[in-house]
Every structure is written in C-alpha cells, then in structure tokens.
Image (cartoon, rainbow, N blue to C red; front, side):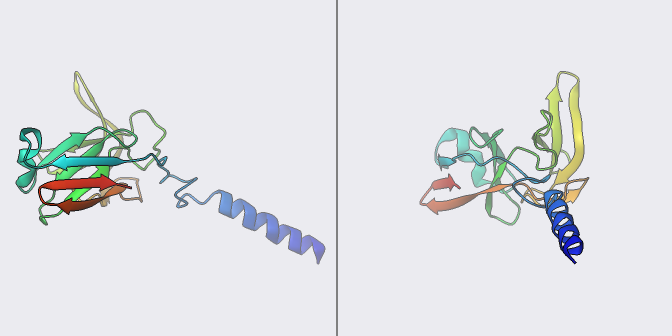
Amino acid sequence: MKKLILILLFSGFFASSCDTDNPYTGECFIPEVSVNAVVNLSLPEYFKLQNIGEFVFLEGGNRGIFLIHNYDDRYYALERTCPYQSDEECAKIQVDSTSLFLKCGTLADTGFVECCASKYQFDGTVFEGPSRCNLKFYQISTQGSNLYISN
C-alpha cells in the first residue's frame, strides 16, 4: 500500500512538472515586467491610430508592444514576445501587413526570417502554427484622447 501511495505521488509530481500549459513554467511563459504607458492619439506620431487597422510599435514590455486599432474598432496592446518558446532570441512578433496578421520571427537584411511559424490575428489570438497560447495583452483604459496601457 505504501508503494502504491509513493508511485501515485511521484507520478502526480512528474505530470505537473511537465505541464506546458502552466503560464509560469510551460511554453506560454513570458516574464512579467511593469508596463505603464500613455499614448495621446492627438500627437502626430499616434494620429494614424485613429484609423481602423493601424498599429504602432511602443517601447516597453519584454520585447516591445504593438498598439493596434483593430477592425472591431477596439484597441489592443500586445506583447511582441512570441509565447511559443519565448526564450528563443528569434521569438519576436512582427506584422505581416500584406496579409493583416502577426507572425513570429525576425526581420533581417534579406527579409523576414521565420522562427516558429505561429501566426496571430490582430486581437492576439493564435490561428496557425505550433503555439497554443494567445499573445500576452496589456490592459487599456481611455480618457479623452489618451490611452493608458498597463498590467
């Protein structure tokens, strides 16, 4: 009986340590960093965000933030770190403006270099590739022409 209990305990431990859906240890892990930004849509560098389908890159987060005015007329602040094997140097989200989606890889002098083949919609949901996780998003609140981005 004692052996059976030990076997069950060890099997439960090993099963939980291999759980890739755990956001702190699995493939969806992206380190937490403090994000606190204000974007004034009246400023020239952000004025294009008033149009649906536009986006800008912002400093912050782990590898930067996309601020997107999506086709559902909502704003999304998305982390640029790909959640699939996020520790890889190439795991950075880029915009494919010809197909209107986000993809994992890096830009080089020779063009786009794919990393994991994951693709995401502009709202951050995964729709193709090995990633099972949506892009990490940051909270947005609005006051007048200001967008406040935080976590």
